[in-house]
Image (cartoon, rainbow, N blue to C red; front, side, top):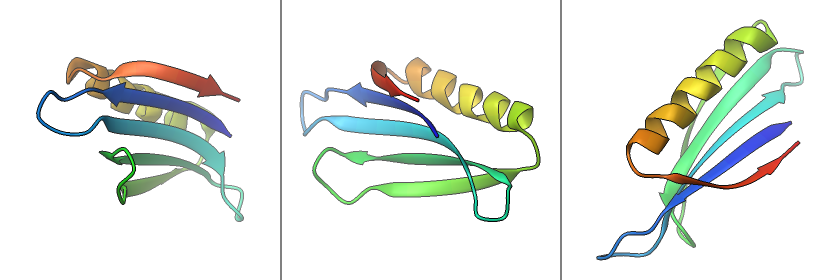
Length: 79
C-alpha cells in the first residue's frame, strides 16, 4: 500500500486534507482511493480499479498533481 497525504490550511475554516492511496484489492486488482475533507470531519472518497500497477500509478500521480495545483502541500509518505 502506498499513501500520499496532502494538506491545506484555510484562513476561514479548519485544515483540509487530501489523501491518495494505491493498494491491492481482494481480487488482485489494484485500486486508487482518493479521500478528502476537513481534518477531524467525515471524509469523502472515490475509488478506481485498475488491472496493472502502471495505470494505477499514473492515475494516482495525476490526482496528486491536481491537488497540489489547488494549493495542497505534501505532509507525509508511507510505503
